[in-house]
Image (cartoon, rainbow, N blue to C red; front, top):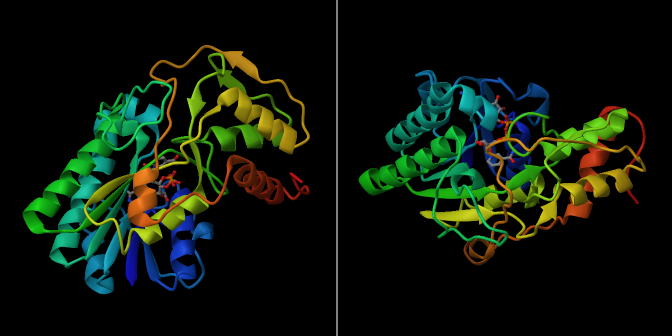
Length: 312
Ligand SMILES: NC(=O)c1ccc[n+]([C@@H]2O[C@H](COP(=O)([O-])OP(=O)(O)OC[C@H]3O[C@@H](n4cnc5c(N)ncnc54)[C@H](O)[C@@H]3O)[C@@H](O)[C@H]2O)c1
């Protein structure tokens, strides 16, 4: 299948492209490289340096005629969204609309969207499924949820088939220290450099960490299943920031004490996604637990610094 991957030079997008190639699909990447890197794009995969919010994106559709679109390109920084809500909306909402209009025009058979657990807002210390009420606490969460609504309207008005994937905190090789859920890349890189990282609040807040290769797999499975459905993509596990830091310290054989500082306003205390719907509809299950995912991630950061190997 010919698949246009927007944001395919980014952290998650580049893994999606790798999974597509491995599964025998034919990906094409469109990315403006604002946070992504050409080095992350698989060799021989056609690449277009283009901003999805500009009319130029139409030329990519016209030339490539993709069967499916996997849309990951976005402004992913929650803090930026709070400083510049209009800028966030321009990238995330208008960018998505532009892609939907082109997908309709060029008869795309499946539109797969990277949404986020940020659409849910405040949760208790329990795992939540897709029926949990949405109540985004940031403009980023609002722009993700608005995009979901446009996707559903394009489906009901123009029969454009879709799958929406709401990710938990994604981590793994190539993640930058900015944007959503970068806590693992920040801890890993600081620990490597022997610099104590900050922990905001008491570190007892919990998150559901999902490895990027599992997220790549969920996108590939969505090409042929889960049509017109929304799925949580997480591990349904909770890890406190303190536990996470201990695991990273242990795997890296480093004993650096973190610096505890004031909790950040707007940070949610707990987040955990029930993934049973993705298991039954997409036949998707995370293959990596935190230990194996962290080992791969730490090795990546270590190798990019050419220093040796983490973990057992
Ligand atoms: N990382 C997470 O934990 C997480 C969690 C939930 C959802 N998501 C979503 O997953 C997607 C990928 O996120 P990521 O973590 O890989 O971030 P990333 O910044 O690494 O990737 C985004 C990519 O999109 C490109 N891009 C941004 N704006 C663009 C534009 N206007 N036109 C063309 N290209 C553009 C960037 O250059 C980059 O390559 C995003 O939609 C994000 O909202 C990420």
